[in-house]
Image (cartoon, rainbow, N blue to C red; front, side):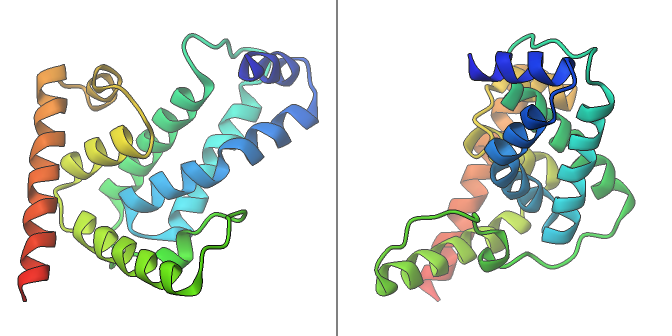
Length: 180
């Protein structure tokens, strides 16, 4: 409900609405883009480009489903376009993708979590792009497989298969690291 009000305010020229939308979704969108691109600077550029397009479409945008879904799809499309044109850099460090506002766990818990997330990001970087996109959009972006399929231009079964194969490959990569 808040998103509908924010879009209404944005469509009527209220800057505070854009600030609230940006504050609300920025961190999640940067994480999604960083996971897809393996580069935080490019991820931030993608997110900023999406918000610029949102500003330019103010007055014409109507929520059909959800604002977060719209923004997530826009970030995924922008990231895919950038991914196609640029050579993919090495995986990003979790330290670079952290949220600006987070609770503070105990130091030992934080180190263990960071190491686990670092391993996960390294493993994600090894997946084929379509599988990585399906995994990240479903888990981080909380998109349904129907929306992922539509975004990727495939069937729902293909999107689901890409997700399953991606998870299977992640498990294989992570399990092989544990055995070493």
